Image (cartoon, rainbow over all chains, first blue to last red; front, side, top):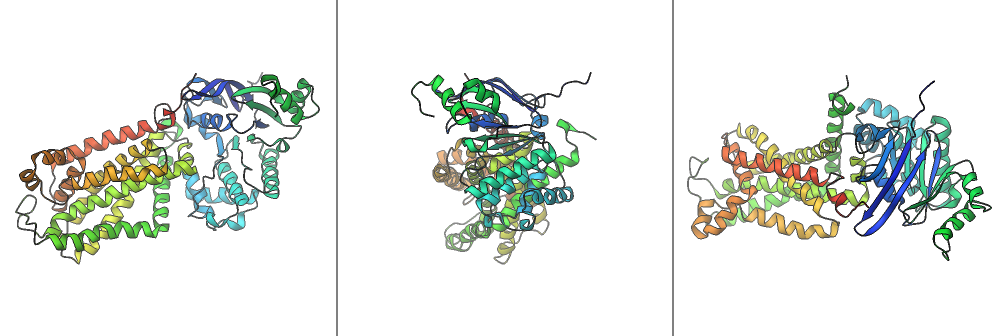
Length: 252
Length: 274
């Protein structure tokens, strides 16, 4: 019998605090390989903190995080090599070209210039920006910068792509474009997606969802199951009910 | 062939050269940074030194075998000053990168964090060495002409002093939480380090006027960086200064690596796991 593939991302009993302020409390869930999982939570829910722990910007002292079976604390190289990350804040160098940004990122994964250029062309073609390859990043629109960041995160062919509120600050069309590109990626490459957002309309019924509120996981699983378990008609209703169950009187 | 931590030596080289290449690109794109780095020591050389050459006599002290112009005396200090400013500029960039997200790009690389930070340090040092040589080209027309081989023998000295001052800057950057706080740190680090050193006046003169200040200067790593460069410029090795600079480089570098360690450094300072 073939061995079961480990979860793309497994978070087990992770807690975290900034001084006296608790940001995450006993958070546990897992992301299946090749799935589109949405981390849904209001601003301040702890999404970015969780991202910082998953990417080892912060140390995980309480609990354990593993990526495709590699513990991020014990074997960070193996864990991080399988991750592509798009942070909430823009992280491209605005002074240099798209191509130069991608080559730099590839170097940080041990990929040489020639191979990086070939990979960059493919990645940029997937986000419809191949014609902007030689443009300085500072000349791109917000949506285009985001698409370049997605192309960059995919350059080293990660098996799991993390995106922390990638549509923040974008107009409706740019948001739709980003979502469409990432969903196509899932279909085309079977790359797992872990997408953090506070926008309900970015979640589809076939997705998995992790609902995070004030550092607590209120529910996780396929959207239809979470909705059914809450007794609500849709995810918005389910989210409101779940929040009210832990915070009576709160309006989600 | 798979090497340490799953990467081959070639991949380590690709990563290192990528970090240096990016720093060089950034430097090329920020022409004003290059100009200011060049103008600063030239102002000292053309104006300050020209004014003080008649006032401050420099007796024959090693490594000089004869009386030298004041401009000649302060040149090693100005070279170290270029590296000091560059080290602080790099750390300022790191604080900026941390705020904008650029630093995260570096730190989520699967390569060991100490290696990434060392790469960043080396990249900054390479840029500072280019700045020093650009300064020396102009200084040559100002009668700052050491033995020709001196231009070569300062290279390892500049590499070491650049790493030391860069590591100090990196350590400071880990302590600064916001970009706005950085100017204060610059004033508390750069100016005291530069003035309380042998960059502008020989230490025997300082000792004559203030033994206390002399000990401060002796304690200042910048003094030893300046002297290491000064002797190397004349194809000599100042062993004591070399030992101090090497030791300080190691201490600052370990401090910076520790500071950027997610479990112990600045990233964890305000965290507490429950």
